[in-house]
Image 1: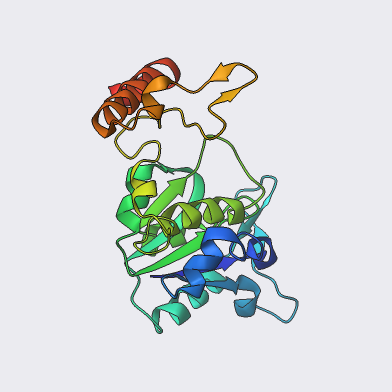
Image 2: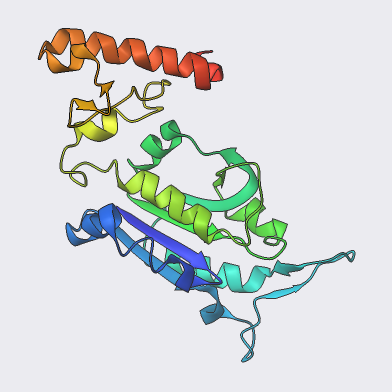
Length: 224
């Protein structure tokens, strides 16, 4: 899978993709991530990629020309299945959306900045708009990192145990059940007996029951 990212501040994405599971995915050549500095397509020698908004108002807007030139230059290299714009007013990002995107071959992500991007880019190039929450960040880079991580970790072969991702929270609209490790008794806090008996069927039933209880308590909206 190939993910290209257009950013005004590409250095913000150096660390998220250089460690842990994302690093492993790249080393296995299961995921290729390329971050492109939008200023490479700036309209002048000063590196300008933004301008004042028509109609007045505070805040700068990312201009059409640099974004169009960047998008079309990358489109000459590959055909994108989705061109995603990270924006607070986009579609809420979910595990189901991550699952769908993990099946794509080529994805382009545009990171917004300032007051956002010229609306004409959204109208003529963007195919999917994603929000990671009802709040505003300084730019779309951190949101893009969240999306790439969620997608990348469920690509077959990335995790050493692929069943791990299948039992994560939200995969079946339930939160994950409680988990425990050794010792079985710590400060008098005991691991549930059912987990120590080795009966796989009882353990699976207990975990499902606990998932339902936890979801009802913490996120009842998921059960609807």
